[in-house]
Amino acid sequence: MKIVIIEDEDLVAEDLFLTLKQIRPDIELMASLRSVKESIEYFSHNPSPDLIFSDIQLGDGLSFEISNSIEINVPIIFCTAFDNYAIKAFKTNGIDYVLKPYYKASLEKALSKFDGLKTMLVKDIQHQYNVAMQTLQNYQLKESGTFMIKYRDRFLPIDLNKIVLFYIENEINHLVTHTGKIYYIPESLEETENKVSSDFFRINRQFLVNRNMIEDATEYFPRKLKINLKIPFDKEIIASKEKRKKILEWLQQ
Image 1 (tube, rainbow, N blue to C red):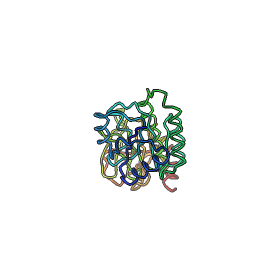
Image 2 (image 1 turned 90 degrees about the vertical axis):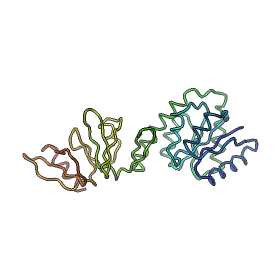
Image 3 (image 1 turned 60 degrees about the vertical axis):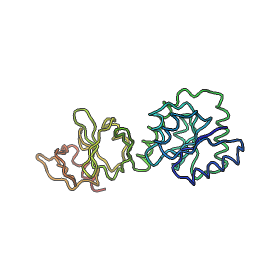
Image 4 (image 1 turned 90 degrees about the horizontal axis):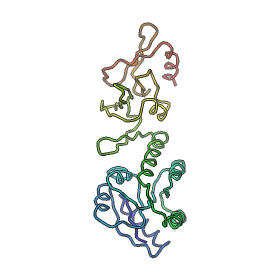
């Protein structure tokens, strides 16, 4: 069996290969790749292996980005440090995963699954990548406090604590960071609201604001509230009198 390992830590990649070698002495390592860029270059000019073992988070991005640049019709076993909540969600997509640190038993189980599937042609790997990417985004948002966005040709993880607010303008959802940087995101404000934590509140139809980034709330006639942020922002954030009580209770939490 010929394999490729995609892992940005050399010692981890070596440990993975040695453990696999104990399980299957016939395993042949075609390449050990350390980044998204290196992987794209390799798969563009070399024959495909029988199986790929890939870390999810690499130094220059997520391994899901590889299939966005080139077509990969090879079964992939992802290696991740995420907990079982994420793993169970991922497994519904038909791709197997092993948790770090690697244990012989989990690798044996993954290889056994591969044996049962290797006679099947993997035709829908791009779709599996896309679904897994969305699952990863949702998991990171809820469990690790990271909002993943696509910026140009890269995926950027942004700490929720560094997001000031989301707002919609001209039917486009915007994300504003604590440094004033603005990113455009494809999700609607409603979809974003369903993903983020209780630190965010939908002030009105236009603004979804991070409580930790609010300087204060001031009276705004008649019986409305004006939300003032800790960073300069050129738009007024006004809460209706109907939402006034809920917002004040939320701010006190």
